[in-house]
Image (cartoon, rainbow, N blue to C red; front, side, top):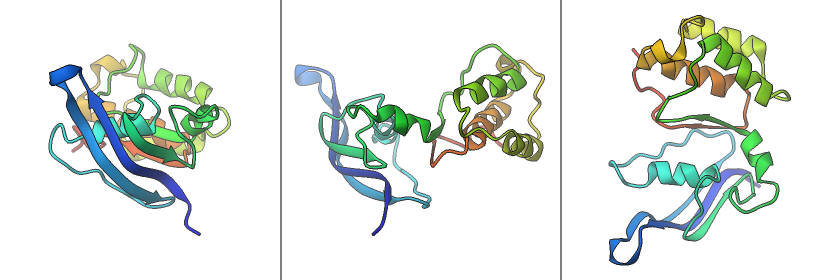
Length: 169
């Protein structure tokens, strides 16, 4: 039997009120098997980011359902378990005003059970990430490298990458 990382059924998300309603996600049904690579492709405003936000429990569906590792990320009491298993690279890579090195240290403290210093060192070396530059002074590409390092080093079951190549050479 196939285990699914993400499953949606007739997923709908609307925003607004009255005649100003916008349907950001319109009846999305999909099954993403564990261990697979899956891309959400579409035009601007087609619901990709909204779907990711619902998978992370940051937005609730208007109707339909979404499951991550069998749990509803916005409603189940065990949703913290879902978040512990997600590595996320956001589209907007704005972090606190610290060095990339300090950002790695901070992230390590949140993922004590799964964080790998060895993996972080390998990714930093491979991506040539400047660790001692203030994050706010990094180029967009280096901010993306830092975000990728954070997501990969926590050894998550599921990586959610929103615009993961933005600014990379």
